[in-house]
Length: 502
Ligand SMILES: *Cc1c(COP(=O)(O)O)cnc(C)c1O
Image 1 (cartoon, rainbow, N blue to C red):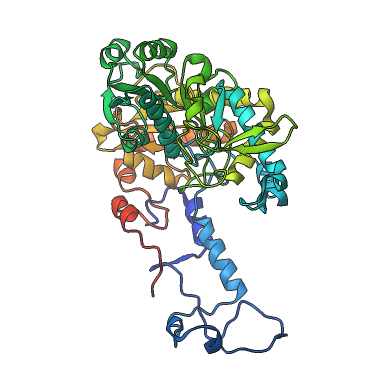
Image 2 (cartoon, rainbow, N blue to C red):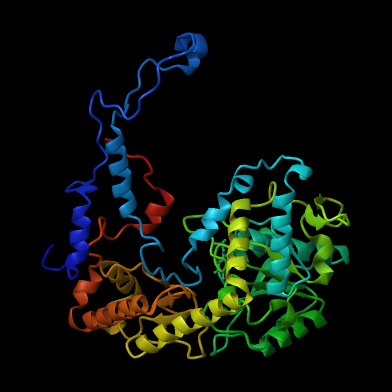
């Protein structure tokens, strides 16, 4: 193996943390009689387990009891944790996911007792501060999005999409015709068609034009009395801004349809432009992306949804309101509401983090986020464009999509390049998405990366491009320095082995 490891320091780092032996992960640390706890002397009458638990709930023996000391446990989990790739350890350029640094002030505020330890069933007069925080967050989002109302209930991107489509459905049904189809461009995130379908709609796909944006003539032809809405991502997953967005809104509105905007990419224009000013009827924002609450591995997230005037009656209940006396309350009194989409107040801790972030950044700080996010993506674009093919040359915003077209003649493909990046210590970018780019490499650096880190990433990408020419086999067989090599990814996702067995 040593002959092909090109990053000896990475391999050395790995060897220093012996979470692995030659057979793989070391999980067996148990030694008879070791203890990792000490209990104080019993100061209540001793009771036998047989008095406390009915026989059918008791076991005679515990087969795989693990006997370990505190130091065994700490070292085991610390070693395992070092195998995690995380934004805290380096650039995480996963396009469309906005993996940015999460400022620690967010954590500090989220842990304040009144936030972290309040119970969702507490009466309103005991949790006025929490309700005020939610109310303030809605006010901030209203201003940022330019929408007259925002619900905080949905807890993820896909969840907020369903919420938005259900509101459109209810509004149209109330008018007498819920319609049958949602239009979705071929560059959309996979959750868009899934959510529309879940809400009962059929999908009509719109082909993007050569700039990677929507073709207005095509749109005009497709919008008829059966179309409920267009779901569009702005900027789209190619990182390209739909510069005809107000014309798009006009086409839909003239036919009585709604314009739904997937705002997961808000990082590219927060503080600079407002969806509400573009004629958008529904916009969601992923707080776990733009507003810096930690995410990955499935949650927890928060996906507030902003709506235009005509959709306000259909917002989920309860809404959070401020009374004339200045107190805050939950208002269930909305007859046309689609109802609740989530228990209690969504992922409250995530909402606390998001407001903390907004307040600590301030309006100019948020604007700077978008400016630097766009600058960083374009810096990478400029440094890599001679080595990697750019399928769309429209200006990029917060992310840039390359393809493997320059490398395929050496029989090296996107997956190989992504795997090789791991040997250089970087998390791979999003690959093979958007689907309209064959062999896509979708890179989103975010605004929180220092220039040195961007340069190290670009240097690695350029070194890999050279390797593709000179030693393609090295790239094709990567990664070389990771604890496990190439996995059967479908099996790893569908039949994960979650429990170690001797
Ligand atoms: C991340 C993302 C989603 C989905 O959000 P989740 O919180 O992962 O459900 C939808 N659309 C776009 C454009 C995204 O980037």
